[in-house]
Amino acid sequence: MLEVIAYLAASVIGITLGLIGGGGSVLTVPILVYLSGISAVTATAYSLFIVGTASMVGSVSYFKKGLVSIKTAVIFGIPSLIAVFITRKFLVPAIPEELLTVSGLLITKDILLMVIFALLMIFASYSMIKDKKKGGNDEQVEQKFNYPLILLEGALVGLLTGLVGAGGGFLIIPALVILSKLPMKMAVGTSLVIISVKSLTGFLGDVSNLNIDWRFLLLFTSIAVVGIFVGTYLSNFIEGKKLKPAFGWFVLVMGIYILGRELFFN
Image: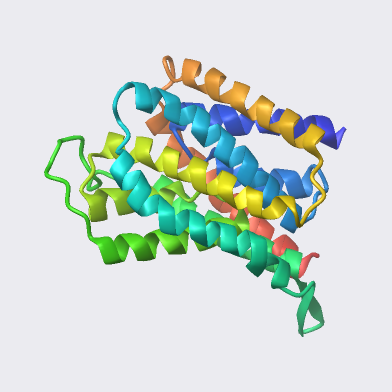
């Protein structure tokens, strides 16, 4: 029964991505852990594949409209994909299964990853809830690169993606607007390309470390991709921007729930 619910939840991930243009991937790890009974380490690996594939599909329409800056994707993406591959290939496997005991609670690798992920959800929810009127615009301006900060931001996003399996679009898009002076729509399209490449690269770092259930992973991913097309169709009738704050509150509640479950009710 839970497996059926998990597959239905996969469609919700895709619909959310298609409807509001992001955010749905942040639900992937909790769904895999709590509904499919997969360990946090494996769930973050699966999430990289699912998020990478979904982002690749989502980027196609932006490519067709010329809303992808290849140069920016390369400059930002290289340090990011190097960081995510190293994190998944070497750092995550090096984390001990049992870390420490705090007030009688044994902190394991899985708990650590879920707590980091919950904090990420809470942080991401803020960017969804707040009014972004002061954000980037769609006017074309002369593109300038702040190379040191772009390289640093790319590496940090890669590290974060490698640890928790999230795309990190809520970090990448503002960075592209501020550090690369990209118009907002082009920043969104470029971020999808960066997320797809770095996520799938990170997943490659896991292939030799984990026993991958390809049947489950491909079916789950396929359902999510179908959901993207459904969400994109629904966006013709429903304004995604109005739904984003409500979804942000949902992500916030989920993040708090995961923190409580892992730290107090595990």
